[in-house]
Length: 516
Image (cartoon, rainbow, N blue to C red; front, side, top):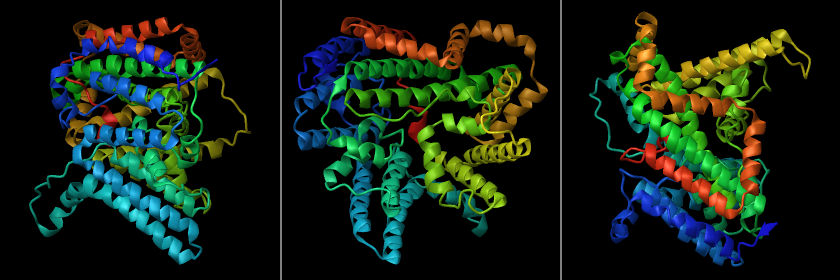
């Protein structure tokens, strides 16, 4: 059964019901003007009351424009720019610059046959995208690194990092690279390309959507089947639980305290903080991805899965096939393969792999901690490839179950170890944490720690249980959500919102990947 989205009765009734929950978020409509303006302290995120309020009216207008393709595309693009304005203020101009440059370069690339001219156009696209990214993200890092060479005193420039710049520059750059590689034809209309680059569900924190997957959907007749509608609600509910209930609570009430000052806590408290952050970053980022995919699905667009239970992995190679899939596949297709991939011998392959992961670490942040994090993963990937070559198992070989369990435990703890470098504010903080783990573990205080933070550890247990449960359980829950009548679907979302209110702090906690 299909939902006719040109008729707003079904979706309209749903969003009207959701609107009744807005009061729980404490939105004062008399101060709406101030709320709608950019506030650097409160970027708009999916789990905020303001977004729910705006999305209600956005959806009603979106449905009315169902059969007016160009108007609908222009409306969504304008809303996406406003969404980015609420996240980064005037820096929405950067989004327009990237869009205009790559749209025109893409069209010229397609019409140009000379190799040198095509390389020049591709070079301009890369310079514009990476130039913006490097200026805003790496200027102070590079300045600090080279300051000692001329004996200067480092005083950081006042440069604000626009939210999500790493995501939309990578997404736009992949478009021109695909045209350069003759894998894609350029779009005919600037408004279509602007829609692709700025589409708000995945604009500020991914997933990084390929032009070849997304652009063909833009002008297709829109429809939302009952299965799509129910699946979208399931993903949004799952994302809210992960982000606003599990991740935010354990972050504010335990994990942040540990990593802000690891020297004040015992080794066992630090270890629990590492396990907590390992869960927090997964729930935070996969929760955002779930909500982005679900919101896009409500609007009739299909995004690929971005997380696939990564802590179930039996190797680091498998981990990167399950974690942030859109980024890992982007790095493979546009960086690793461009460096030569595995086409130039084993030594060169390992070098390319290390460079890809080091640059992937640097992509996450202008800090030596991130580079070390990427290097550790790159080294582990190389070691795993060497190990698999030594073992030389036939295709389809499956390890015995005790080996699979042990491999999962080892891979999980390697990921935990690496997250220490990712989360710590400095290498000194990393050293303080390891000193506590090695020399002052003090496991005897474990019962007191758990008793002191009962809800934190209850949510940690819940989060890990949900992560490691069989995939069939998740599929069954999704199918149940699809079959529910509308009134029960609304009841489920209302219950989740109520739970959010019971555990949320006074401030909305931004998504971790907003900083990237």
